[in-house]
Image (cartoon, rainbow, N blue to C red; front, side):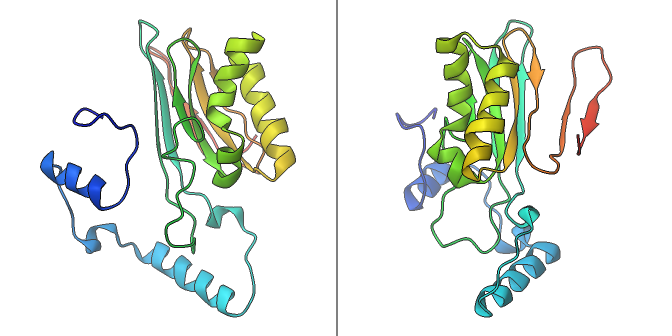
Length: 195
């Protein structure tokens, strides 16, 4: 974003820009973990047998962060572990600004995890900001509606972490659990998985 006019790029041209910027590149071994390899092999065997595994953990592996500084500036970042056995070329919601990641100093910062295709269709992260901006909803009201109604009613399991410019935090999810935590200056960190 500092060296081009573009917001989101993928493929060979994105790699070329990264190389020109001097970013470090690692070999394939850097990205290999036995657990993920084993999960992929199990998934491929199931697919070959015409079976499916409905364990939602097989589709999720997101790490997200949202932040509000002392001046009310907001930021969001999201990285995904992907979807085991996904189709080649599939791009989920994580890199799509407005779907799985969004930040706007006027409203909120959001990072989502879950069924990415539904987050994309409902532009989940930016919908939270839009509900705040245009419907006057609080961060909690907007995030809860998007996660518990818009996403949940459309097979969109998952949740979000979000913060507004006043430092209000909400972490709604409609799945069995969601790894989450938050910390405020001068306070102890809070972490949770289940309700």
